Length: 341
Image (cartoon, rainbow, N blue to C red):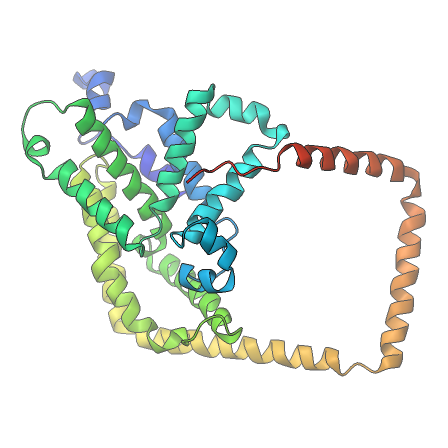
């Protein structure tokens, strides 16, 4: 949703219409070609949709420890992100999506460009990979602070492409953390869900540190060194109109309110997580203490239920079998990795 919103809000200046003498070519140059590139726009939205597919709820460092074969495949770089691209493209390559692929890409050249755009967008969400971060910073400086970028003359095609690339990266990055740049209650809602995910990883032995120990200060750091600078870059791009002001304003307001109320909120989140953990532990204990005769009765009941379902489904069993065979054949045709990173 956030990626779509940002793309829709790319505008010319203060939103001048064609009646004001603004041509399609003017808008094309003003938006670095983004406004007239539907494949690029779709790639950004699709990347936002699939960038966490198959996410394990732990950071890449933990993934490398738990799943060393993935670390080897992806050379210990952006493991979760590269895996998401692979999973998504394998699904998209299923025969039943043939018509969809034709609409998205058209031909092999379009398919390859879509793949490259998708990989680029998804990898942009890995903000802790040092090498990628340095490359993005260099591209930003070259795109917006170089001599060509600051001159009044028209941009070269290379200069336009560079700016389009960096804007695309910032659209997907802003979408990835869009809860921090929206209303306070939206920020708090998704902040707590992330806390719950990381607390569950800690309780399961998949993280060494209880997230509550540094959550308050960590959020302040995240606002100061990532969210607010990102919102300022959206404004500096100059193509989002008043939307960039909106994102920056919400980010600064949420940062201020978190500084005032964050410690209290952290304690409340921790208490809710602990209560939920206690409930699950108690439920598990009750299940483990069920007498053997009760388990036997439950097994008899389940057997009767299965037998009833078997009789009721006997009329269309052959149809289901045929469908299953077709699905297996479809899957056999599509078992290949599509993202060659």
